[in-house]
Image (cartoon, rainbow, N blue to C red; front, top):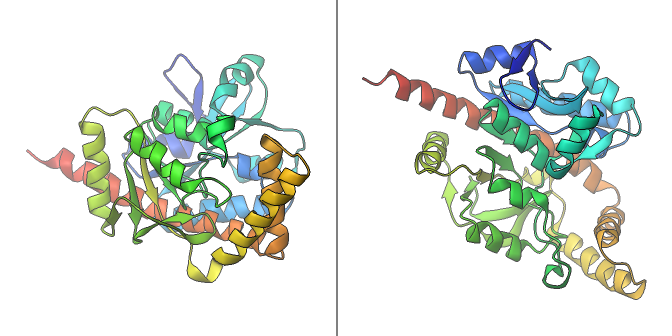
Amino acid sequence: MTALVRSAVPVRLSEEVAEALHAGEPVVALESNVITHGLPYPDNATTAANVERAVRDAGAIPATTYIEDGELRIGMTGHDIERFASTPGIRKASSRDLPVLLAQGARGATTVASALVAADLAGIAFFSSAGIGGVHRGAQQTMDISSDLIQFTRSKVAVVCAGAKKILDLGLTLEYLETHNVPLVSYRSDDFPAFYCTTSGLPSPHRLDDETVIARAIETHWALGNHSAFLIATPTRPEDAVDAAAVDEAIAAAIHGAEAADIRGQGVTKYLMRAVDAATGGKSAAANMAVLSTCAEAAGRLAVAHAKLRADEGRRP
C-alpha cells in the first residue's frame, strides 16, 4: 500500500488503484464480504480472483475493499485475497460497523454498504456486487430494511448489480428506491432482475442499452446536485440462471416452515436461503459465483464508457 487519501478517515489505496485514479482510468470497487462470508475455501479465493479478472477483461482496474490496521484499504493483492479467504473469524463490517472497527484497528470484510463508503471517500465512481439488500418480507411489522438501501441515498457511486434476492420483498424494494429518488435502470433488460434469476417479474422504471447514455445519465444525476447512488441492474446470463418458478416454490414452502417453527428476525433470512439452496440441488452456489463475474464484467465496461465520457467532456473548449 502506498497512497493515503487525504481524509479524516485513513483510506489507503494500492499503488495500482492510486495510479489509475490519478490518470482518470476506469476503476471498479468490490466488496470483500463475499470472500470471508460467501463461499467456503478455496472456492471463495477462486471466485474473488475470477471477479477481479472479469473487471480487468472489460478494461478497468479492480479495487477490492477491506479494513485493516485502522484503515479503509482499497485494492487487494493476490496474497491479500488468499489471506482473507483462508483466515477464519474476520468480521463482517457494514457501514454502521466502520467507526468501531477502524477505532479498534480490527480486521474487517466490507459489505455492499461499507464498500460504498470506501469507494465514495476514494473518489471511485463504480462499484459492483451481485445481489443487493432490500426490504425484507414482513417489513411492515419487523422494519427489516437492508442498510444497502440507506447507503444508496448517501454515497455518490454508480452501483452495478443483478438486482436483489427473491427472498426479499422486491416490490417494496423498488418502492423504497423510488421514494428516496435513487435512479434505477436495467441494462439490456426490461425487468428488474432477481440475483441469480433473470427476472423478478417486475418491470424496471428504465431500460438503457447504450453504455455512453448510461454514463451520461450518471453524470447528469450528480450534476443535478445529488450525492447519492445510481443503480444499474443487469441480469445474469440465461445459462447461469436458476429457474425462478423453482425458487418461488421453495420460498413459499420455507415461509410456512419458518412460521410453524416460530423462526423470526434474521433467522428467517438464513432459513429461506438454505431452503432455496436445497431446492436447487446446489445449483444456486454455482449461480452465485457466475453472477458475481457477470456483474463485474458489466461494471468494467460501464466504467470504461464513463471514464471516456469524462475525458471527452474535459477536452471540450
